[in-house]
Figure 1 (tube, rainbow, N blue to C red):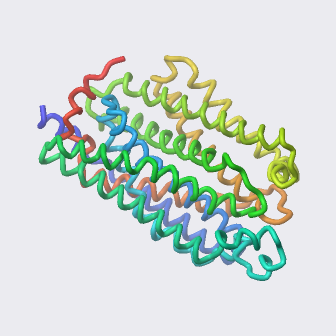
Figure 2 (cartoon, one colour; figure 1 turned 120 degrees about the vertical axis):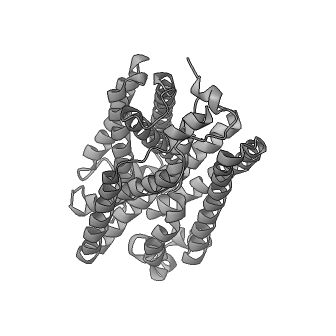
Length: 394
């Protein structure tokens, strides 16, 4: 059985996939450099969107891995290595964060000393919102994510050759520590990189809002890749539609969770009607931004909810691919909706700059996945639960 597993796991991906990722990344960053000299603020805002999109997929995937270990899931074991490949984005985040950390003053109002000195709200928040502490937090979060990524995936890969079941127990313990660390770091990441774009505004539910979008994005990326690999015979034949149903059901559940949290945040602020809170939503219903607000509701909730509602839809390849691709685009739109209106007196507009960095981000995801797929098994062949996972039936 092991040789059979290895034969399926080591099937090489087409070279054109790597080439496509390279072209997307290079072209995206090349136009991104031009965009920076054309409109530095808009370029950096879109770079921030790309960076947070990659955080969502990379760190969100690591959360899904930890969740599998914690709940002792079996159905997801045959596809866990694919999730690990997506989590391999985490080391690249260190380099990708540098342009933002160097140019914080271009997009963050609280980085300007004169502005903070003359604004009581910003002055009172300055012990937390200052460049030094911000950079320290960002670096610490990156180190935590990389540490857990390295430890958990190292044990998983080591198990391919050793078959040592003790490595699974180690990963369960690591996952139990990582999940609360993830909850804290992803919350403060949302506060630091997104909520502080408009530092006068605050929301006690914003961290959970970003978390919900992060998991939807990670699950969408996993679902899309799993379906594509299955259709092209890169996965073990025992990975069947029952496995896809579990992915579809989980994705459907988190789509509902995102919708609930998004509505809860709006409802609490609308009901209280406090000027310090409601201006954020008012801004996103004025100056043409209502178009993006409605589009976000439709793409991030209404359409995927309807498409994935029935049981057969959760096993339908076309519907799963459509929903996953739509939700990935919707997550980028969600980040765009949060980031872009933060510019002072900004009206809704579309620029070519808004497309270059998302293209580069997609290229990075493809390259990271392709690089890992060339060097590692597509199946965790040493996992003691793999056989039960392959024989999973609803």
